[in-house]
Length: 140
Image (cartoon, rainbow, N blue to C red; front, top):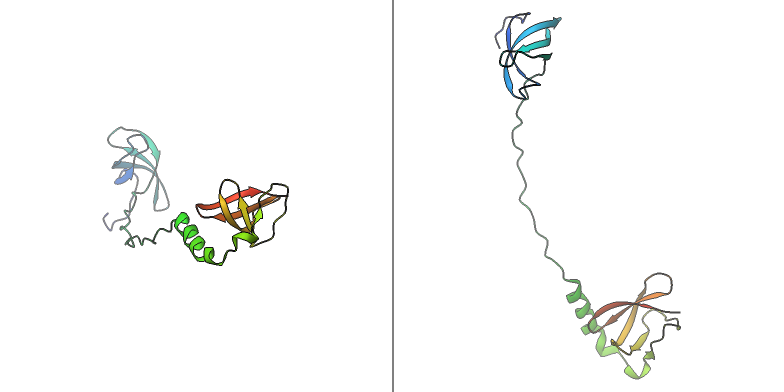
């Protein structure tokens, strides 16, 4: 742009709504010193003046930091290895869906084997840690 003030009939670069590109336009109407209506010199359509988009400098991106992926099964197996030596298999309670269990109670399940109650997992449910991982079981 030159330092002289713009007026109707001058040429200006604007975004054409019909061509959808930045093209040269002729100013048709002005309000004070701002162009309001322009005519595209390529397709001859008249529309509101749209300023050319200012390209932003790309922002400096931070390199992605990867957190080590934790395998839940590996964590459960590690917990089982740490807890197993302290288990007294003779004190284990036979599992039944009708029985209520306390936290840290040792149970003997017919399919999964020996396990320890880890937490209450909702109404009438418990989370039990077995050798092959944690399971959610129904209880009384």
